Image (cartoon, rainbow, N blue to C red):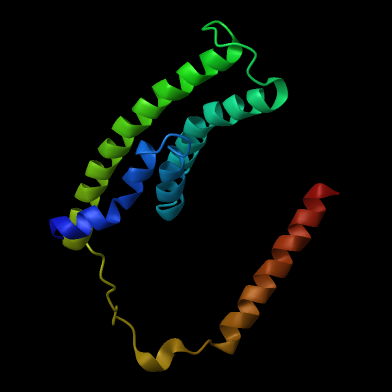
Length: 146
């Protein structure tokens, strides 16, 4: 895979640089690769922003003091913004290695031809024997339980 294809597959990293939606890139890549940890990580990056806007929806902005909860939530959100930027670049680099190895280690299906084509049909005697064994197992189970 060439460098342009790697960059095209890593477009979600741009979302980490946008202030209020920095966790959505991890939500996208986690759902695309079916990785629950990345989805949880994306939610964790979005929680401070949700709390910040919920605080202002309930209380407004009385004054800008460092020790009020809105400032602490904003500080927490900005720290997690920088963490998400570093982490998304790191995950994108690791995924580029995975994309390279996917081409190298593709699994190809193999056809096993170790049985004869005419013997695929079930034998009625075998089916009867299997049913008989299942009936015996149920009878023994009932005797043991009762």
